[in-house]
Amino acid sequence: MIHCICNNINTAKVDAAAANGAETAACVQRACGTKFNCGQCRVDIQARLREWRTANPVLEAAE
Ligand code: FES
Image (cartoon, rainbow, N blue to C red):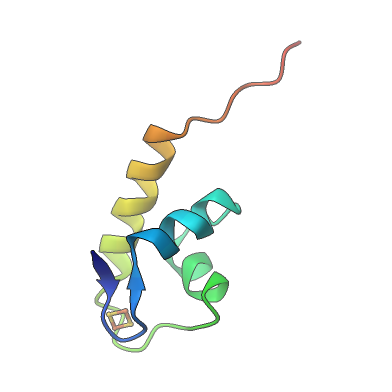
């Protein structure tokens, strides 16, 4: 699925950015070497980041 039409950012690219620590849509744009053009994708990318974090919870360090 394409999340950002302007920069051709699909789900795989958002997920890869998330796996590398991207926490915001702007971080995803930077990770892809792009920046917002129209900005219409901001909410959609954030939603995908939330989905990714839900599916890939950070394991808490053992104390
Ligand atoms: S759809 Fe992402 S900047 Fe336009």
